[in-house]
Amino acid sequence: MKRKNNNNTKNVNQNSDYGTINSDCANRSLSKKTTQRIFLFLGIFFFCSALWYRNNYPDLAFEQILFHLQVPLKGANFQPVLIFLVTVLPISCVITGVLLYLLNHDVRRRKSKADQKERIDIVGPRFRERLKEISNRILPTIRRRGIFLSIVFMVVAILLVFQVLGIPALLYGRLQNSDQMGVSYVDPESVEIVFPEEKRNVIYLLLESMESTYSSPEYGGGFEQNLIPGLTELALKEEYLQFSNTEQIGGALPMPGLGWTVAGMIGQTAGIPLKVQLQDSVYGVGDTFLPGAISIGEILKQEGYHLEYMMGSEAHFGERSQYLIDHGPFYINDYNTAIEDGRLPADYDVFWGYEDEKLFEFAKQRLVELADQDQPFYFGMLTVDTHFPDGYLYDDFPQPFDDSYSNAIYCSDSRICDFIHWFEEQAFYENTTLIVCGDHTSMANGFFKDIPSDCQRTVFNLIVNPAVEVSEDQQHNRLFSTIDMYPTTLGAMGVEIEGDQLAYGVNLFSDTPTLTEQIGPEAFAKMMGGTSIFYKERIILNKKWIPSNAIARDEQIHNYLKYYRDIQERAVTH
Image 1 (cartoon, rainbow, N blue to C red):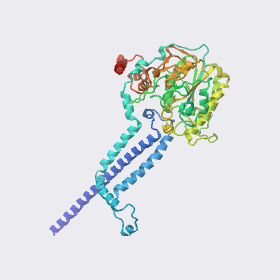
Image 2 (cartoon, helix red, strand yellow):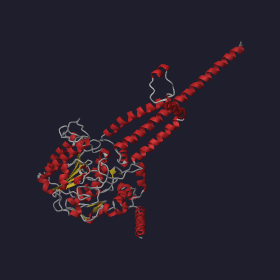
Image 3 (cartoon, helix red, strand yellow):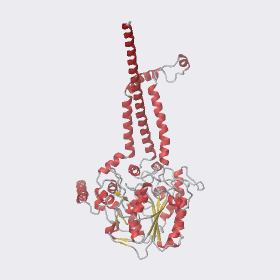
Image 4 (cartoon, rainbow, N blue to C red):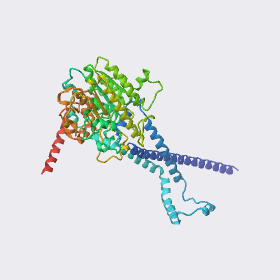
């Protein structure tokens, strides 16, 4: 009996061990399946994200995304993010579910005889046999190596995301030393700047994503239907001034470091690009943003100007308020200000804050107040209605086009022209210059897929009532970027600049060629987008005396490249 009891006990223990082993196996199998599903979903999500990004923002600079990840996002419009999540997440879930179903259900499983009798043979026996053969070979392999294959797919999808975002190109560009940065820079504090006896007011209207490209080909644009008829008409009139890269309407060439709003603002007011930092997110010393930059605000403040910037969004977004305060300081009249002073109710929230219709209304009221004061002023304005992806539409305004973005541009054109005509009727017009300029080219790049291949996209500009005149050669067939608007703004006010250059911008009213014209657009773009020790030391860290090895390195590379180009030219000649 003892022996029998021992055997029973032994059997119970063995069954218990087998149960434990089976439980462990089941847990490991479940864990593997869960891991496989996670990696598969992530791979599909990254793959769909890459396709969505390429379709919607094929040329959106990754440096812009990186910069906004490094600075506070307060005041941002998250509509594009919501559109991305609503579009990509459901598609990724559906595709993942379908693939998991196919992988975990044997396609070779035969149906019941009743079902087989009712089935209509469409594909034929050969196709079914071939499908069985393929499934016999592939499915077991996929199931055995599911985790490995899911990881491989996820890695490939991530690499695709990197490629679509332009990360390899950005890294390659940063590996190219911007040898021209140290050589070409002109310190605004080192040149003589002479203001006229009667100081001129200036209104600077910075237009969201405004391009000359929106005009029709007969005027120099790229669209069959002219989206900016009002601005086109003004740009072609002799009493208005537009600097153009062609004989027709045109504008500034897009360049790295100027491709989003705060970067465009910095370029047009300080004459420098905004170089995104890859190794760290430091953009200054202490609490000062780009302390080495000398902006038009600092120059005008020394001359007794009142400085003010109005925008219908939160100025905190993208460090705009920090830049304007540190380099002026400017009085910031933004969305929050309008709520605080009672112009808008506390719960008012349209598009990015408040729409351009109210921006122009508020600006007119404020300009009349400033004109009554005994102080020259610089009044900046930033529009928002033409922001990608679709802009902002008004129910009471005509919408003659089939898509919302075209209608938003068309409406903005009308409002801008109305403001220009209002300005021309004001008593302060005689001693005030109005400068109208896009902040950058549009990021809604899919919108431009049908324009002619030889159409150069350019940033729109228009100067109303400048203090000086220009010749035909100074106005047309110019190669320039929005960085040249920095000294050009002062030039339009009748200010004389020793050497005609401030930072990297050249006064377009002068006979001095821009840096783009001197070294060529490709070399200038390389300088703007590449890594520079000089930029880090001088602009970000505000070191007035640059270490000799930094300048020496820049100059050494510059001299080497010049020597190399000379050799190539001689070889081609001979």
